[in-house]
Length: 64
Image 1 (cartoon, one colour):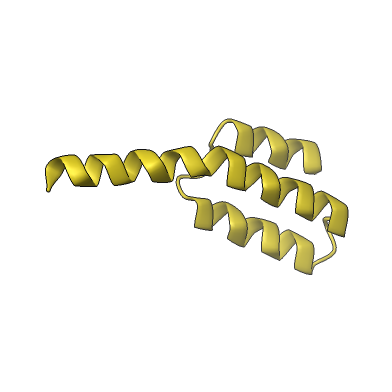
Image 2 (tube, rainbow, N blue to C red; image 1 turned 90 degrees about the horizontal axis):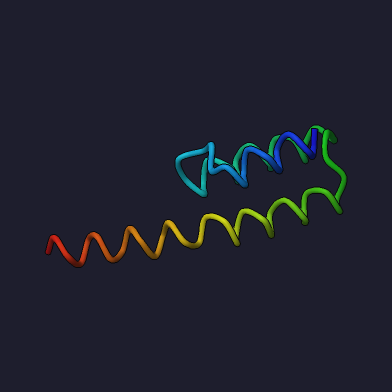
């Protein structure tokens, strides 16, 4: 399961960071993920989805 989620995050399958975090929280709550897996995936989310937030801010500033 961790490998599947890792691939989805790396390929930015989910449209928002919040959407990914909600999914990971549910999997963690139901013990599908261990603490270590959850932490690793959340760090990956921070790394991969940080870029899109910066890009969104630049687009908003350009249209304002």
